[in-house]
Length: 132
Image (cartoon, rainbow, N blue to C red; front, side, top):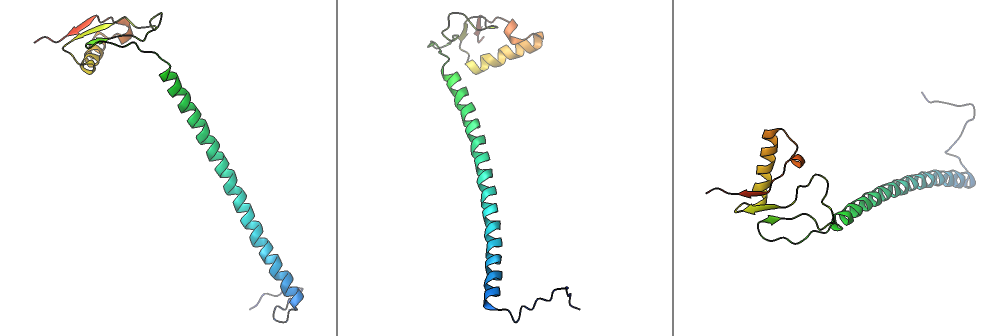
């Protein structure tokens, strides 16, 4: 059974002018869809580029902030604070290490603070020496 409408359209016996109009309308619909798709893709690209630029700016600002902190040169076995007029809040001066690696000293300080139940910035370590 074929669907029929009130206006009968005979596509078999169509004139050249009507065929051209139908073809142009078909092309116009396809190109309109392609243009809309292109606009959506361009808008999404701009959103992602803006997001990446924000992330890069944040990263660059944090790197610049970290690079701006001056650190005084230290001798072997001694950890010094950054070269500032006043030490940062919670610091307790320099720490002298005798035959101990800085990583091991950090672990020892963390263990002592944990066992004492106090924050690390409330404790003052003057020196750490390996007992042989």
